[in-house]
Image 1 (cartoon, helix red, strand yellow):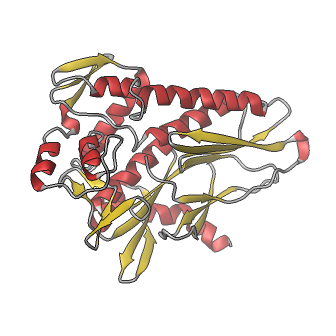
Image 2: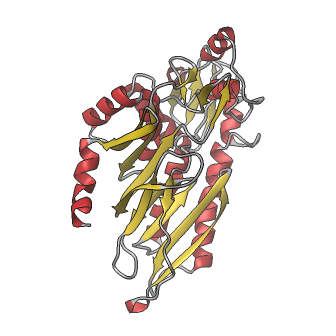
Image 3: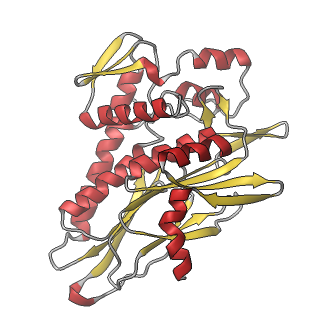
Length: 337
């Protein structure tokens, strides 16, 4: 899943008219953390009830999609040999189909089966430390990578090669959408949900002000807000290569792997933020655009009408700009400041 590269602007607990209060809670999840802020009316769920619902969703996703526990559904599938099929829960099959479409649309730039390459380069759950593998090792790992080796047949997922699934590039965005939807079913019309850096906001705070988040500048020494946007009904995901990387012999190796080369990306794109009504879609697209790089990524965003904000290295500094859709969404906000 994309690393946390957005900042939640602090929001004090407010008491407003009609008995509305701004409640908040959070905790550990997916190797990171989650936080929920929501406006509670007279008939809204208590913090205890909301927390129970949210953590139930997170526990279910962990049981199904975690590559860090041997008893998860995805690890059961990953352990199977080529030519095998396994019945999987509906959400997992839906995400595989979603990822398959992203892979097809991007000519393979997005791929849920890159775990062998992640492990090889030292970034995966079975990695053995940072290393620069040999061309032969990369070729061997690439031989068991490819979204095209997966087929959904009814309630089963089948593979014609010993591929391994990794949901980390979309699981958090999916979780955000699930949590926001469940809170809505409980009568919550205004909330800000963040899970491992992916987030979505709906409605407004009790004082009538919008939810605001800051897109972080690409620095690895401290957190600096680069751009502040207001959200209502939108999810946000940022992918970047400046937090999770290693250096060998003066060269920097990013955790973002290009499935085509089998190696970390080496272009000048430092970070990309995607805004979309679906946090799941934003999550997947931020990874996809990060793999494509500045030129191909920007062209893809324009063709697909994606609201994306690109930060590119330029000499010792950075250059940033938004896609047409991003400017369309947030230009008015800039003018009204």
